[in-house]
Length: 145
Length: 145
DNA sequence: TTGGGCTTGCAACTCAGTTGCATACACATT
DNA sequence: AATGTGTATGCAACTGAGTTGCAAGCCCAA
Image (cartoon, rainbow over all chains, first blue to last red; front, side, top):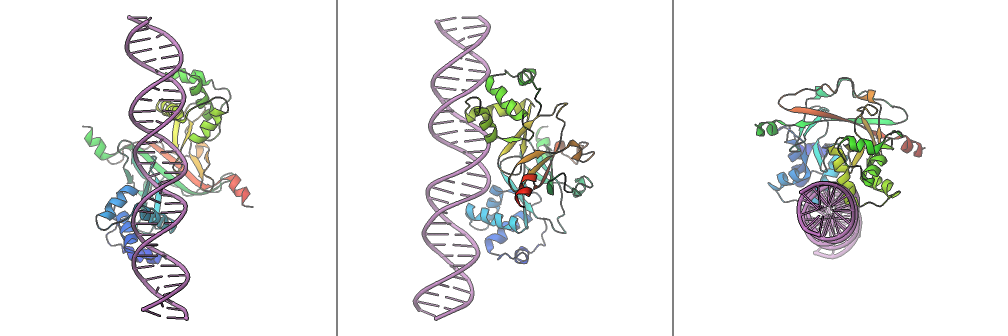
């Protein structure tokens, strides 16, 4: 997402030892404009260094736990991992192509106004809201013609 | 959801042969106020008759395909299955408890006004929008005290 | 009664992620 | 240098949810 991010600094700022693998995982996620599945992250990291899938999942757990990364559900059985919220990356809804399964980020203003102002509703506590649009992505549309 | 539903009729109305297992699956889903995971449906059906899990998944695929049932993602790795939209069951958002994982249906008016009026945005076609609230459910809240 | 099509069952498989345990490396203490 | 403690990583095996391949049972038509 942002070329100028210093991933080592981000990790340290969240109390995480910036090992090469953790930097590579966070960079792979941060340099993409869309949330990635674990299999895509592992492929991206392996372009540069070797990593075991268990290590990847443990790094992802850690980053999600620290809020650096967000675990997103795409409506299929594999989670997607995208950058957590910061000044440069405000909350936004996502789009999932029901044909090819790709997940894309949408503009934050597509989040219906006021949707963040949910309160205790009845006797539940509501903490987050997740808005996911589904349809056909641009490249699948092109491929149909 | 509704005691007065005639599940055999609903199946026939959607061009599906109303076998005992299909009726039992649809009834299990229809009589609950919240969407169920496959493991809960299989348990409910097995209170009355024997069913194999492959058969259950095939029936669920069929019912989802015919629009009688909606496949919902709860943010974990197991889908939930709830009744499809009808006059009695209008579209509504869902709530997922991040502690116990239960999924509940929320009031339709919690769907932000106008969220259904999404259009072709950029070069994508958007067909559906899925709104999922997350937090702590009533019974988990009680258990904390 | 033969054949085709639908429904169900069983075993084995897939896929994404997890667990248990071992190894490796870093840094501190003796 | 030797030892210990903690964290990071790897490998093999496992889990849970769902899928595939194939066979058996059943019904109705020709």
